[in-house]
Amino acid sequence: MTLRKAVLLEGAKDALAAPAAVLFAGMLGFGAMGKANGLDMWVTSAASFFMFALPGQVVLLEMVILGASGVAIAMAVTLTATRFFTMCLTLFPQFPEKHRSRYYYLLVHFMAMSSWAVAMKDFPKIDPDKRLSYYTGFALVCWGVSTPGTVLGYLIAGEVPTYLNLGLVFINPLFFLLTFTEVKPRGNRIAIVIGAISGPLVYLWQPNYALLICGLVGGSMAYVIDKHLRNRHLA
Amino acid sequence: MLETTQLSHLFQDAGVWSALILACIGTYFWRGLGVYFSGKISQDGELFKWLSAVTYAMVAALTVRIILLPVGLLGSVPLIVRLIVSGLALAVMVSSPKKRMVPALLTGTISLVLYGLLVS
Image (cartoon, rainbow over all chains, first blue to last red; front, side, top):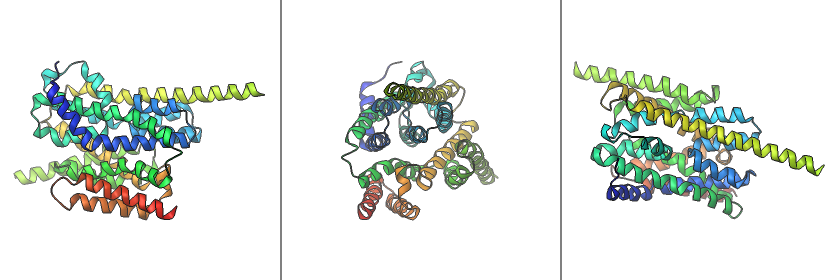
């Protein structure tokens, strides 16, 4: 496996445009949240470094504050991370098969919802041979800004007024919400609508399993509707 | 007395760290498993289409849940404010067929910060 430096840098540059800034702000917010809730700085920043999944990190933080048991915390976080499984299943097949190597097991740690969303949108426009180098640069920048962001957020937590903190914790979910408007395939658009409606409702009923239920049931419904529409179009 | 407090702190820290380590392993488990099985999937197949729909349903469910039923700081903002701010940002985003991500993000974030400033 060889990575092309020029393409890698191009990916890194594109990441700096918006996704990395959004992640950085989100991690600033997370660091500040850790400090405000009396968590150790090492725990807070290690979460960004080793877990690198903001929704899971927030769940971890909330449950630690509530005094939940380690096993309960690990289970809840692991369940919110289920999305990474299907994110991988839809991202990695887009790299040419000849590029497949053990390196994927390292690269996958740097995958975030933001870099995945951008890859899903932009890969069709990128030469398949360049995708792995591009994604490496892109994802590494996103991951690279996260731990410094968390540490900085932790350190300046006392100095930042609450109203600014509000912006920091809101920018990440807002970014995801906005990326949904750029999704093109019809099946995926239907899935987003079903997921958006069912997500909060199912969460009220089954907070731990909400993502799994919404994903499997809602996604399958969207797939079936899309397939039905495709077949009708052909007939 | 002091010693028992220190001891309980130590246990508390150990509990937090073990929760963190287990949670990180759990998160990486899905990533690694995904890489492992990704070699068996073709990006042109029906399976890929279904998995994409499942993933988008999941991330949409998560995103909207965070906005409508947030835990932590965002929960201190009334639901109607969160809805209006999200609506404004979405409106800016779709107002032009070109890329509007940065103006839309700024619209949403700044209006929420302004709200926070007003009530503080």
